Length: 203
Length: 370
Image 1 (spheres, rainbow over the protein chains, first blue to last red):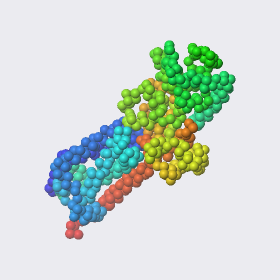
Image 2 (cartoon, rainbow over the protein chains, first blue to last red):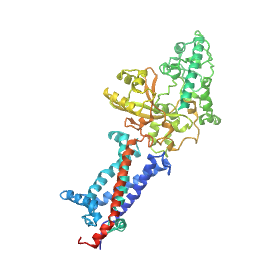
Image 3 (cartoon, each protein chain N blue to C red):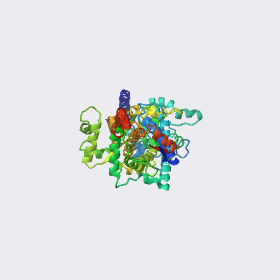
Image 4 (tube, each protein chain N blue to C red):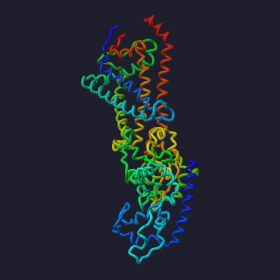
């Protein structure tokens, strides 16, 4: 069994800050939206914490952006258009069938080819569309009056709020599914360990 | 709600009684406003040696005409009650040593409420804040349908700069724009939401007369036209139908909402350190502040057409009033719960399949050839 260094330190720092920040955002977001049902934080504190953590996520996104673009590693997010469809089908078959039979994962993880075809598809959407949309809608909702003109351009406060809330539910679901998928390594905790050490065990 | 109705009925009865008294008094005195305006309509009229708060004796009749007092038939000498006759041959037709107007002669309940307020208590420190410091002398405005901006600019903002004291408040600019000061600062006052139609084409609030004209009705007929089930409240469906009817008439816009205080004497009970600071009083879908929702139209004759609206209408996309939590669109939560449930189901099914197929994987591992 060999080890491959696939998660450099900046990526691990970014990932775990993002993970904890998202947990806090979901908790405070639920408190803000359902104040009549839940009462573990005052609304005033929830809003303040939600805003501060939101800015941590923005700074963390900047870390991710600068690291990946400055090193050129952003390429790992780009799907190979010629093999993408076939690879994605192969990967889906593995998750839906092969994994239960003990077949090997068709994707071999390396530092330059970290994501399988399905991950590439998911993460490119997450990092270039969904997360920026959540950040921008969040900034607008942080200062509604200050960004009134932009909010109006997007169709009004209700539309911006709808985008933010739907993405909130999406990210809450994503975190749950993402954590489960992380148990699909050669042992249930292998990928979790790798996200701390940086080394994935090539089994 | 019941309490509000009681208050409104009491206020209406009191106003009616007052009008009868005033009408009788005015008739007896027979000094009409025109006689007063002969001199006080001159914008140069002023007191030479003043010890009072103002020197000018000019009354802008155009403003007075639309004041809440004149609209209700209350004339000059009803308030300046120590003028019982005019001697038009004299330099000044009445005594130059008139008593200050005592608003409390009529507004007793307001006086009582006001006595328990930081503004009245300031008199102990030598600061006298009479009614007209906030309400003005002669253009005391009708406030029933006044916007938050009109209410605040006419009253609190004359003296107070809210930007100095609200740094803790998230979205303070939005709060200042959409929530009247007294909603938080007069904790006992009943509150309600006023909805107004904002025309996106003309970029202005649509006057009631224009709406009625397009719908070929009047304020009374409007209720019958929109409130089809005749339950006295415009339901979300009836509200949506209203929007569609307006669209058919090429009127496109949204309803703007504002949270305002009821015109009630306790609105004067503003005291230091007693303002509401619990955000969840407003920001929860069960907030009592959002129980009473009204659709209001200002009519050209100075009256106000007001209709009760079901609070669920605030949760539709036709209303541009986003009070966090309170006016949340329930459909989004249903979509969100379906999304999370779908994610949980996929994980549960996949995990179950993994657990159930453990023997199969063991077998395949032991017999790689198979």
